[in-house]
Amino acid sequence: MKKTKNKIVFVAIDTSNLNQAKKIINHTQKHKLIPKFGLQFFYSKNGRKFLENYRSEFMLDIKASDIPQTISSALHSIRDLKKIKYLTVMASVGLQGLKAFKKEALKINKSVVICGVTILTSLNNKSLKEIGYKDRVEKLVLKQASLIKKAGLKGIVASGSEAKIIRKKYKNLFILTPGIKLPGDKKNWDQARVNTPNSAFKAGASAIVLGRSLVSGNLKKNIKKLKDHLNQ
Image: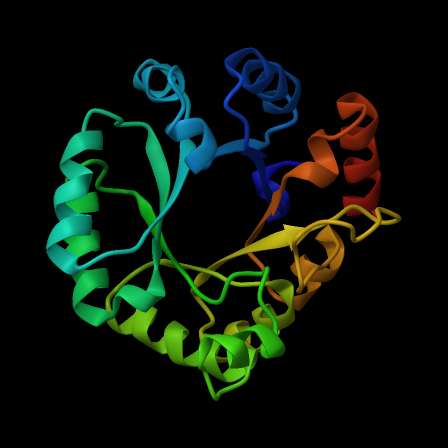
């Protein structure tokens, strides 16, 4: 599981328990997995402080979503986190919001990969209709991909179900795919559009995010299962 194989894997640190987070990081770092810190960890009492002293590259998955002034100003509070390599913002903030976010994020780290988050993997066409959208998932994701490219962002977050159509149109876009489960795992969590690691990479993903499917149960065995699967 090395970057040289073009199979970048992030592990989701979705916990407020610092000891549990450290355990996951210690077990996965030696296998070249990159930690992705989500809101649950970042908002926790010790999470923010831990990241101040973290010395390896990581993703901060805040999925920023507000008016341009607010999301760009909010980044002032994390300018000390110089090791942020990947950062997320909702594509739904619009073109001006994406541009404002990018401008401020580059002040933290000039090489940061800003990923615009498209339709969440917990949603499907029925969910979108309930919210008020008329277009189907694929069409909305492509519209948002166009917006992300226009804003000059390097990355996009989209499920493996849309990765193929995004890759076909945008050859150089960094595609990050969540909603990943290991083969044989039950789809018993809040994800509607799910893929296995290999199916996501074959569809065109540049990187994948594994969370509960990897860290639940025996972490060591799950890592081996992931490695075996990726080497197929």
